[in-house]
Length: 248
Image 1 (cartoon, one colour):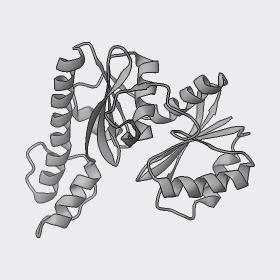
Image 2: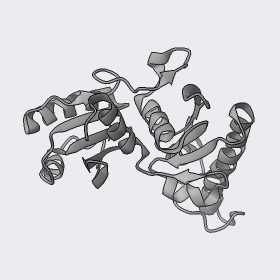
Image 3: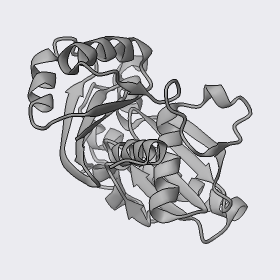
Image 4: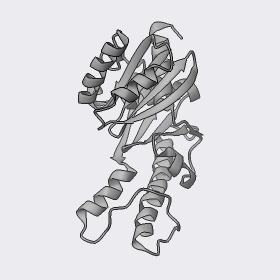
């Protein structure tokens, strides 16, 4: 089995693949340093022969890499170091781009074709744009839904700290729902508008794919998503491993 690992700022997502099939998906909070028991349970669910890590948190990558080497006796592959994402990258400074964004771009093009827009609702919200010639063009980075809510509470005197949830109404009639409506409907409108603007530049036939930890909540408020794939990054790790080693 392949253990695909996506280390994000909020969660570490782990996927166990047997061939093309995702047998199980698991999440561990990134800030939880006492994850060994959970990791051992996940590894124990299958005969792991290889591990590939995609990460945006370097310190967690180092720690997890060492732990996996001890538990499995194998060297985990790190995307961007041991394995290159096989997509042409036209970012002005290619090394600045997060590996997760390249993985999503490659997975999206492989699964759905191009031109393509991938919108990832994670800790941050990212828009990634791939041309009809399958070239990663660039994109946009915005604060995520939870970060935006937390910022409102931290930077104002009277707005409360609230949990991200579905707004009860479009026009909020109390402070909590006014905040939720502003964040959720605001980001939905922003997503619809930006994807339309991007399409006007790369082609009106561009598909829009949604992914990320908050995609299940936000998708019903947006109008422009053609595909939803919450496991896009894990699928991308599997596809890159398969292409690199001609395996699985």
